[in-house]
Length: 231
Image (cartoon, rainbow, N blue to C red; front, top):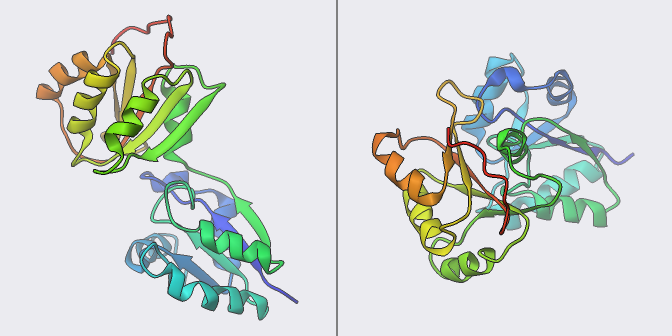
């Protein structure tokens, strides 16, 4: 009998956000495929789970994919986790899922934390129609993508690192100066906060902000007229 592949969401910061179902699944599978065995190892240690960890990330996926598939076909069950949040959402894992489908492996979602959904739930912008771009290209194609997004009539969600968040806000001030922006920092963690305003407002307030952590940037649709107060 073929094993199953469970796609397990893990906390994006606050460990209390893990679900009972996620814990039960991680305890029950034969092995866990993860981005970084050290990160997942710390998570398992916190919840007193002892399980074999198998490294599967963007750098080794092409070489190790077949090993995971073969083990599941040989009646082992597996969980796929990312370092945080929901696997495959701007994280590796899509190829594993695609190959699992081709091989007739049942794939089961264990839903839970997601920075994307968390940011949308508190942004105060329209969420009925959203475009998620993840991380913009670091160099080649970045300006072209920003130019395309400047005409977007849906709410835009981006991920950005601490190293480029100030650069991104400067670019938004150039390409979308009239668009309302919500920058979510360190979601679910102790120093979680949201910066709200137009790009020029945010650039001015950055002087007094702590530029640390991970960021989700939510941008209002083009021509959106309902302007929340700056907070």
